Length: 160
Image (tube, rainbow, N blue to C red; front, side, top):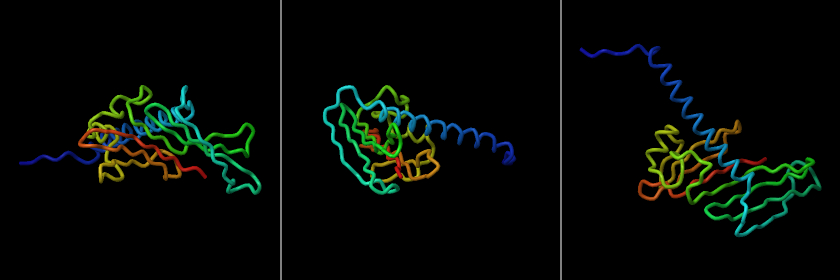
């Protein structure tokens, strides 16, 4: 005879697991944002592009790109405020970094990422993609795999 647990006994475990997934996703999002805001101490290359602000006529903002050892980043400089506000746009990490949790870093086995973050939004063509933690819902964190190893992590943040 099979025994089944009442659903109300399982609910706390499901909520706790989801909470752990959300915390891990928040941790890796915060680590990525921290890397972008810190820039890098010895950039290999830098570039800057002038762009028209979509909300304020006659205001020019900037998109800055920085290449660093093991990662590259892009951020938006909004000149509508004083001081200008820097907003992360993109970060690509190609080697392990100490600011990331060990189980969510370049070089780990992909199953560790899934175990830590839960089911992804998309898992195909060597890319495991999670929706970011912003309220807008358009931010993503993508783990790129080769075989079963994470070879790259890509954060994309929506900037409006």
